[in-house]
Image (cartoon, rainbow, N blue to C red; front, top):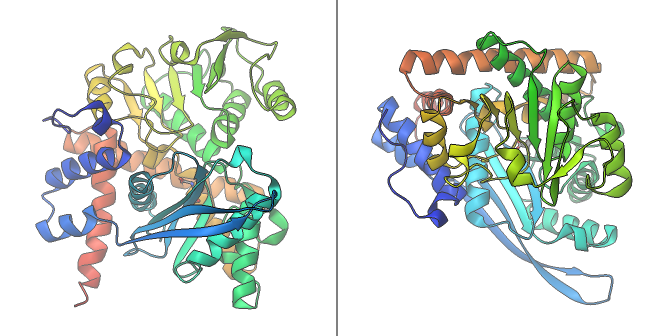
Length: 425
Ligand code: GLU
């Protein structure tokens, strides 16, 4: 296979938009995508930037910057999370928005792709400040979101409470309760059973299918997980409950290792009480970058972008990588992993459980009829198993790696829809 990435600097390597574009261009070329559609799908359709004031607890007014990028709506309303972080950039939100388009197409749900973000430090803000910031951001973008337009959801540092505020603010403007404007809401106001752990459940399905594909057993399967937020902790718990041995958890401020397996339920409780995993008695402390390259069968990056780069990819010993986070592997690292014959389940497949359950939530809100948790889980697992199958078969048929196969499958589905609809002019 020719190279996905021409020689790039480290700055370029870790720019998520460059990472997305490199894979997109490569997959589009492989697909022989028509030049016009190539140009169309390469760019996000709409980028909204808002600068808005928020009264802080100390009586002063602070200005915040927020983004909402809608990459494509050919297959349905735009869909994607909102993240709060000091590091949010327009390029990052752009990349994440296009990943949502590809992700929804890979699992074949009727949504386009979007993403939002606000530059802020949520850990340094009070609940009141977060609420006022969320409500004002929502009102700034309220003309552009809606059940049929663009449906936000939680992402990094946002949660059910954030979604409840967004739903309420939007509903106050609409002068009626509009639950289906966001997903990931609390259960009693239109949330779906199974949504919170859905991304973790999808990661678990991707692990199970990967083992089956390699004729490997769950017994003795050692897993290292980077990140212990919603995705990392739920993946860890579900995997442990299904017989995997979680030997390492890596977080920003340090990692934990226990060759006999870490008791994940206890660790979740410990983190809930202490706000961090450091100091947990059931495992040894170890630097996180060391954990990433330790011997294991499955490595799950489940936190953020750029944790597998040209700096560590050649040292990774895992046989299988399941990407619970968005964009954890750079395009340069992809090629190193491919040379080492590491089997990668790419983010746009592996973490699609979250948006799949969001789809179920949106459907339930619009019907006003709510499903049992077993139904949500069963439907989710079935969609992810089928999508895994689609991607690995596509990879085999076209002699490409799983990531490029997932992009090709997704681009093909979106391009097909655009051809069918035609270009309005
Ligand atoms: N933020 C999640 C993701 O990146 C979920 C998006 C959604 O449910 O719309 O997939």
